[in-house]
Image (cartoon, rainbow, N blue to C red):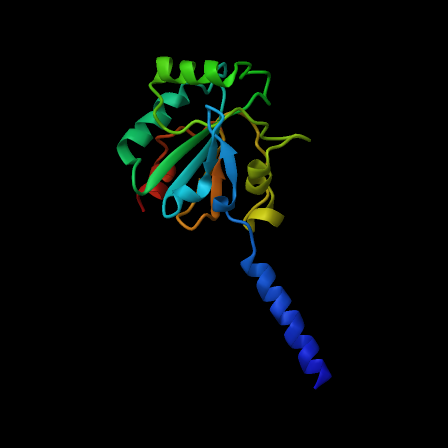
Length: 179
């Protein structure tokens, strides 16, 4: 009888641990204006998370991202940009300068967040979750450059990612958005 209670107790603890797994929605970040932005407000939407930079060879992807957002954004899909200065100092500006650059040069209307670090000792907790299988339950990955794209499903779970050189109009990416 004692073994039964011990095994039952262990199962309850393990079950509780599985249910406590962090999702995308458990994070609150700062938007480009410095205000809290709860990712829980995106429940039920597919989310494309992109680390961005203003002085990168991939910077023109802002245009493709905005096209995706204009075409598919709304009740079921959103893009969130996270400026980061982790690669060759290609995002040196302040949040205000970044917001102005994005609006003026690419007409960006999708949500932009405050500048963060996407790798290293000062990696933002959201990016730690995105890149660590032990936290996201799906895959380990490294942010290899600006404009890497992470896909989050409607339940707040990581689906996978696309390398920086994959353009926003990529057939597989669009297929994920619409299906």
